[in-house]
Length: 93
Image 1: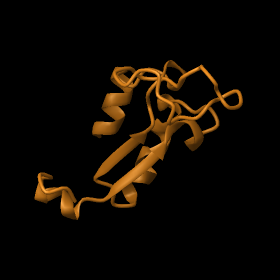
Image 2: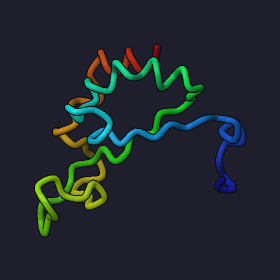
Image 3: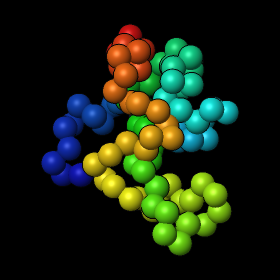
């Protein structure tokens, strides 16, 4: 852990979700039905990665590399709307 990390995080279980590959649809909405299973694993924190729009210049393949970020302040529209009330409600339950 980084020196300035909250020590309470040391005992938290983080489950990483690559949204694009987690479901056939590859959207936040399609992830919602799986949240109960993820929670049942003892998950405290869900890390959605990467969620930013993917660059288009020199793109490799049709999807491109999710690590070639186009805008670090935006959410990839192909993943859906992360801040939809139904998504927030499902994650908070």
